[in-house]
Each structure stands twice: as C-alpha cells, then as structure tokens.
Image (tube, rainbow, N blue to C red; front, side):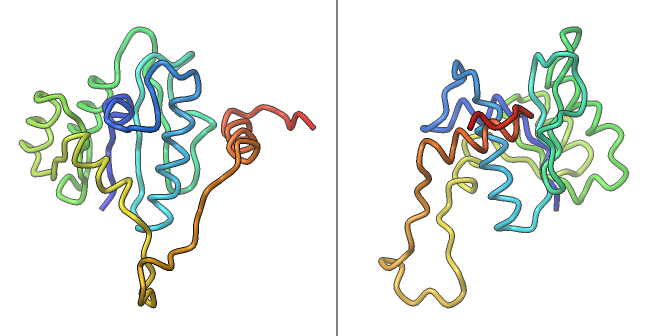
Length: 160
C-alpha cells in the first residue's frame, strides 16, 4: 500500500526537522527512504513551492518526490492524484488538511493525519530475531555523513 504524503505537513510534526531549515525537504526524503526500505511501502511526497515544479531529482526507486510549481500548491497536486488514482483503495493519504482527507475518503483511500504518520515514521526498527530491545544497535550518523547524503540528494558534487 503506497503512501501519498503532504511533505510540509509531516515536517511540521517532526521534532528533529524545522520548516525553516533550508534542507528540510531533503531530510524528510532521507527519513522516507529509510521508512520505505524498512516497510517495503512506496511513498509519493509532495511539497509546496518548488522551482520549476514537477518530479525532483531527489526521487529514488521507492520515494517519488514532487514539488508544486509557484502557480499551484501541494494540496492541489495531491487532490489531483487522488482523483486520478487507478487503484485508490490501495493508497493511504497523509495530510492534516480536512479537504484532502475528505477527497481521499471519498475515493475509499485510507487517510492518516501528519501526526499519526510521524509516529509510524519514527517507530523503532526491530528485526524478527531481536530478543532484547535494550541491545539495539545505535544508528547515529555523524554530521559529515548527514551532509554527504544531503548533498547527494540535492545533486551537489562532493566537497572533498
């Protein structure tokens, strides 16, 4: 079941990413890539105000990243995708906007608020053979590792 996500709604609910961060979209895409790898669920994330708009180079095999042009917004793009989805019952719409949720429900799509999806996104990774959750391996990344991946997502060359 793929997810159709209002990216800025989700960022606004995450404790570790701020909407005024210039890399907020790339950081969310990184989290979604991990979520997709962990769950096997494809994600389409839509953001407001991209130049020039359309599918972004940040997209991966499991995460499609789309920016609304300056003449539109994420809600309109999401509503268009809701209307044109050939298999609506297989999708989950993630938005805090009541109109977007209502449009998804009208097409028999599952809906989640941004806050509810954030809880799924931040759920700890647990393997089937984890006997002791206290012994989970740390997955902390250094600032250099984060910057490396942000540059890769943004299509910037390595600075080294």
